Image (cartoon, rainbow, N blue to C red; front, side, top):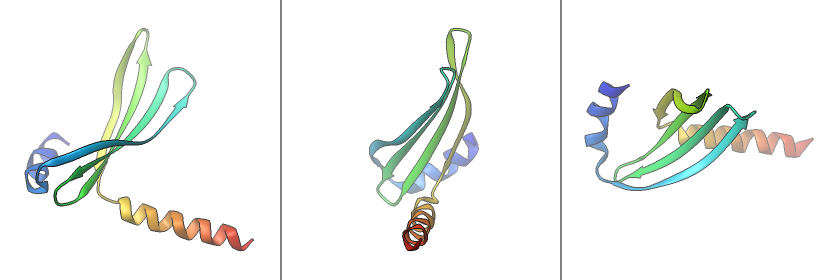
Length: 85
């Protein structure tokens, strides 16, 4: 992931801002947080999975992608099909 970020991020241009898209918890020890980082050339979604081990939070899993628009289209299709019922 680190090498992928190092090679891709410089081509994205300057980062413009960071927005939290959502968060979810399962009990008190598991959390998922999703952020949108807007760069000059395109947005990226960063997903962090956190796990609380004893008294300390750790990043259990991390990934980033640029499939935001595909997910938005799928969500729109899903909502449309549900509205037909």
